[in-house]
Image (tube, rainbow, N blue to C red; front, side, top):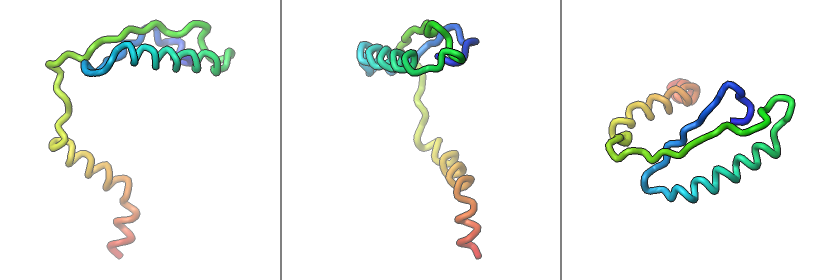
Length: 88
C-alpha cells in the first residue's frame, strides 16, 4: 500500500461476523503508522484508496479434512533433514 506505487486500489474482504467498524479503525491506525514511518524517497505521498467488502455467505471456507494432506506435505518438506537423520 505504501511502497508499491503501481497499486491503485485495494479491496479488503471482511468476514461477515466481524465488526466492520473495528476493522476500519484498526486499518486506519495501521495506515497512520505506515505513512509516518515510511521512507519518503521510496514511498508514495498519499496512501492507496481502499474499500471494505463483506465476504458473501455463499463463499465456502476451506475444509480442515481436505487440508490435512497438504499440511502434512508442507511439514514433511520443512523437516526433511530431521527425517533423514532419524532414518540413519
